[in-house]
Image (cartoon, rainbow, N blue to C red; front, side, top):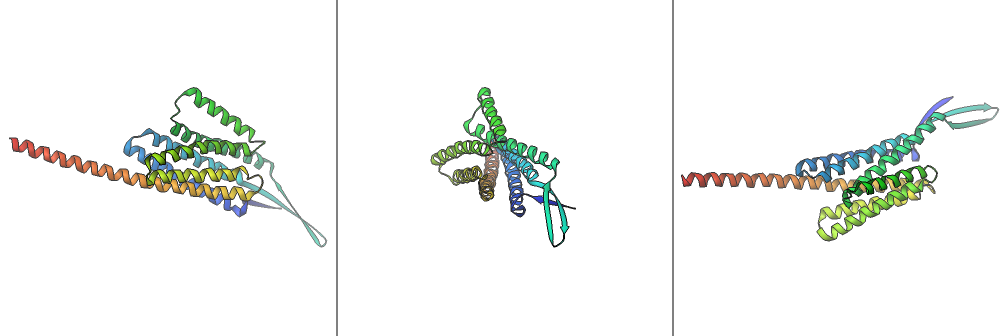
Length: 251
């Protein structure tokens, strides 16, 4: 009797991609927090919380992938029977890890939705949260419902950032639109993941690409804000020097 450890399907490639998503999400969360500190815009603070929640969700996703397999080999004459069965307590861990993954995943994208739509009405917030809770529990039996719910949220976000890019027409707005468009496409693949695990792996790779696009934008934005602050400080110093020269000349 031998115990074997497995991290997901695809020879653990999916768990490796999920680990990369966690790292990128944490970095996005960190840069968003840094931008918040620079310009004191609370939206970036909530943006930071959103991606931290998404990072936590994929920690639970990796746990839900984890299976301990009990290999029993029975030798009889010239043939060998190999029986694999999953330990019962691991089924509970997988189940609750998957529920927490869905919960934190939806919380992250809901926060982004509330930021973008500027939803402050408590009744509307509770209504959206209620529908998401219902979607999570229904997805226990019909997994595609969870992914469809995320698709609807991401569609709203993508449309908003498309409209925003049309107004601003900048590189930053384009990067954000592309990032959320890729995330939307990735979740379309997740909807069909029950048909083939390959759809899920494709969706995860696209999601990682979307997050990387957003990370590039966050780094770029932080550098631009830092330059503005430096230029602002220089301008203030020049002005203060000019004022002191003028006051000295008057004396």
